[in-house]
Image (cartoon, rainbow, N blue to C red; front, side, top):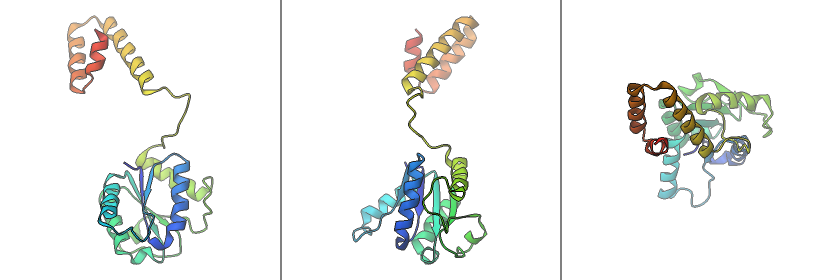
Length: 187
C-alpha cells in the first residue's frame, strides 16, 4: 500500500518523477504512473486503481494538461470523497470545479529541493494525513524488542496487581486482539 498516490497528466511525468523522488527521499512510499507505449493496458489500469484505492494520501498535480484530463479529474474526485486529497500547482492554472476552491500548494518554481519551504509546507500536510514517513533508524527498537518490552511490562503489572479479576480481564482482552503468543510467554 503506497503512502502517496500522485495523479497527473502524462505530459508532466518528468516533473512528477522529481516530486515522487523527493517524497521517497524523505521516507514515503509513492505510486505514480510512468507512461509508456504499454501503459494503457487493462493490467496497468487495474494496478493504478488499486494503488489509488489503497493510498493514504493523493496528490493531484495541476498543470495546463491535467486540468483537462478525464483520468486526473476522476482520480481527484475519488480522493476528495475519501478526504485524502492534496492539490499541487506546477503551473499557473485554475483547477476545475470544485477543486479550484481547495487549498493548493504552489510548487511552480520548485527545483526538486527537499529543503524548499514550499515543499516543506506540502510535507506538513502529508504528515497530517499519513503520519511521519517511515525512515530507517538503526537506533530504533525492532518490533521484536518492542514486543519483548511489552510482554515484560505486562508480566510485571500482573504480578503487582495480584487481582484475579483484573488479570482475567487482561487475558481476555489479549485473546480478543490476537495476542495468543504473548499469553504463552506470560505463562
